[in-house]
Length: 192
Image (cartoon, rainbow, N blue to C red):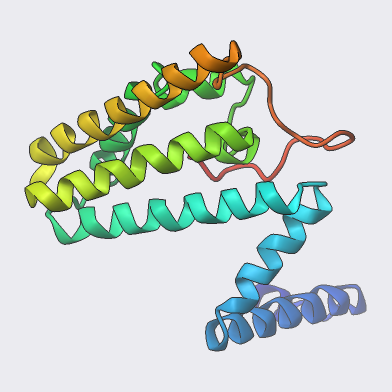
């Protein structure tokens, strides 16, 4: 911002105004966090997502946040520890590591959850909810105890997935990148 402010060119003025608007919007979001949620809904709607999908995505994110909050309160500190625990849960329920699931869908830096079907979102949320409830019951602390909770939570979800697949004859986990028709890749960078 300071660099752009120091540029005397009139061509820098639109960038200055845009930066001021973005800064103002972020300050408004801090004062009223619901604005951020509304903006996320709008972005997903612009990508052609259904209200049902958006609700599943947001519910899944809420479950994820509760799980990571639990971990933070129980001696999980490093980003690598969060990644290890997430991968354990994920490896259990679909039988794939997060990286393998992304590869199956042809993703590189995109957020895996933004490319999941409703069923994949629901099973991911179930795995994380189960893991958190098991961890709370065990009072799991540290990586090793939370690994055990993650393995159990993922295993519970795997059983549910296999039962559903048996009854429907359809695989829950697929290589399809569930983007709405006409959409290209959603936001880059953010990972599952």
